Amino acid sequence: PDVVLVLLVGTYAQGRYLGERRAPTLTETVRRWREYGPREWPLPHPSPRNGVWLRREAWFGTEVVPALRARIAALAR
Image (cartoon, rainbow, N blue to C red):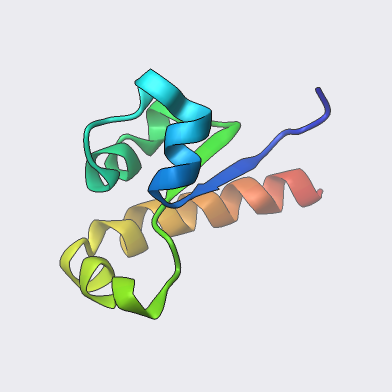
């Protein structure tokens, strides 16, 4: 009950904790991050193998990362 932020890193975590609320693909799930917040944040796995995904999905770095940083900063106050 005291958990205020859950980072769902990768498809396995998203499948486990979002269940049927998860979109059909990782990209779609992460793109819909606002629907799961402010508690749950679906994220891609930070594996070096995901570099292609991160380059292809530039919106992640410009939209999701700053919003997540702001959420963490707000919780740290």
